[in-house]
Length: 140
Image 1 (tube, rainbow, N blue to C red):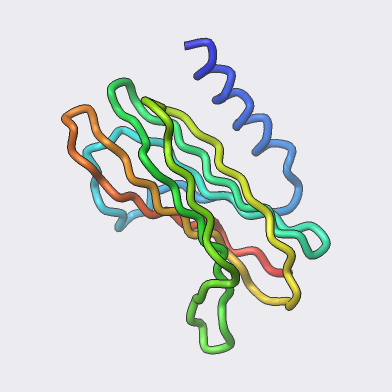
Image 2 (cartoon, one colour; image 1 turned 180 degrees about the horizontal axis):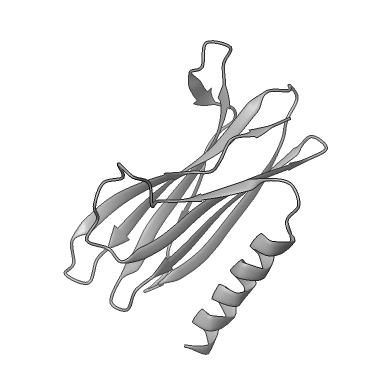
């Protein structure tokens, strides 16, 4: 429990000190309903030409995350989003309710970027859910 509180406080402090960037949770008006009682954030910050992509997963007792895939996306002039670099994937080792997954990429062109995070969660009733979140859009 101490580790969970420690991670939660670290996430809150991290979000409060970042000056550039944005975060988005899965709570949107038309978001699908999930069985999992989750808090999942995707965060993108860009400083100089370095993009930092972070996904934070905090799950309820009895739930665990199995995998996280992050994709840095760039918006084209027509408004379509496409992959800006190869995605990153991590898998859980053991039973884990919390995770902060972070990666960086060097950006070579200006534009509007976002992070797409796809998380596979095993719920307390042993069902598997795939949850997708997006960060807010950040311009470089």
